[in-house]
Length: 148
Image (cartoon, rainbow, N blue to C red; front, side):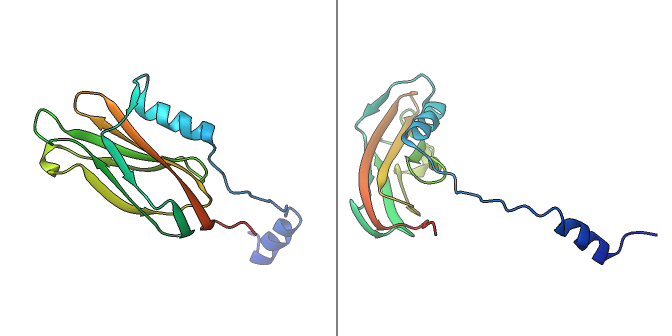
């Protein structure tokens, strides 16, 4: 005869353990590691990329950002990828956008959720294999991911 529901619940009650889970948190080191995974050994240069994000954010639940890359977006010269990284959210990789010459313009916009004041980095990979970046430091007065 199989175990009843009551038997299973009674057996499980004797094995209960309290598990305290803390949210994972990215660090400047994990952001650097994520960037290295994206660019490999290539040098990342500043310029050509403009990261537009408010320097002071009242609420971290929905933070608008736009990344614009100077590129003619032709068959020979275009933006392949735009990646966004952060240093203090649970994951350092925020978003990756894949573009091509038919995109017309190298501009992406989104809203992100931020748990704390931190640095945001945008890196663009161009068709010639070069990487260009911009970064911004912003202050969040009301974090999105509040621990209780």
